[in-house]
Image (tube, rainbow, N blue to C red):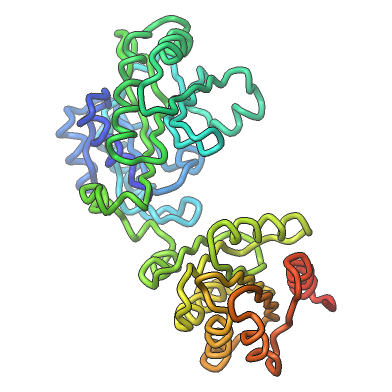
Length: 379
C-alpha cells in the first residue's frame, strides 16, 4: 500500500527525521491560506499522487507570493499525472538547498535483508542513476534487524562529500527504525538535502507499506487513499483475489503467486506481454473464477486469456465449473487457453471438453498457444 508524500512526512516527523514545514490543501483557496500560515516567502506547491515524475509533469512548482501560489494551485489541481488526477496539494516551506542525495531503505528479497540504497545523485530517478553511473550507488543492509552501523557511517560520510555526515547517519538510523516498526517495504527520501546552515532534511518522502502487515498496522491502514488505486485492484481485494493490472494484452488467471509469476516470465520469454497478475488462490470457489474473468477483461485490451492451474488444494473440476459459469454469464469474445493439471484434472478437462476453450497439455504449449491466438494466428 502506497501513501502520499505528506503522510510519509508526517511519519518521518514522528520518527524524528527533519522535514520542511508544510500544509495540506484541497482547493486553491486552501492553498493560499496554507501559504499565509507558513509565513509567506518561497514555497513549493506539490501535487499529491501515488506516482513518480511529478516535477517533469509540471506537478511541482515554486511560488514566491500568494498570487503565484494561486496560479500554481489552479494549474496543478485536476492535472492528470500518469493516469492519476491531482486532488490534493502539499504547500511546503522553501529550503536553502546546497546539495542533494538519494536515500532509501527497502525490503531486499534477493539477499533476504533490509537494504539501504544511497547515492550522491539525489533528485534523479534512482533507476536512471543505476543505468548511467552505477558506481555512484552504495548498497548495504541488515539480515538480523540490527542497524548496520559501520556501513551506514561510511556511506553517511560520502553522500555530501563529508559534510553533514552526523545528520545523515541520524536520518539513516531513524529511517531504519521506522521501516522495521511500521512493517514497510520501502522508505525513500529523494532528495535528502544539505541546507545552507548545515542541516540534513528529507525534502521528499515515499513510503510503501506491506499489505500483509496492515492487520497490525491499523493506523497506517487509515491512510489508504482508494481514489489513487486501480478500481479493479480494489474490487479484487474485496473478492479475495490477488490482482495487479499491467500493460500487456495476454490475460492471466493462475493459482498460486509463484506459478503466476512464472507464467508471466514464460509469456515474456516467448515474446508476449502479460496484461495482469492474477492469483485466484487455493480456494475452489467457482464464483472467484467468474470474478477473475471480469477483472481480466474489464480493461478491453486483452486479446487472449491463459488459465494455468496446478491443482493442489485447488480442485481443477471446480475451476472448470467456474470457467463454464463465466462463459454462461459473460460475453467473452477472446480466445481462452486452459491448462489444468493436478487434483481432479481429468474431471476438469472432461467438463470443458465440448466447450470453445482451447486445451493445452503442458505449460509451454499453453503459453505459446495463447500468444499465437492473441496475435490472430492459428494455435
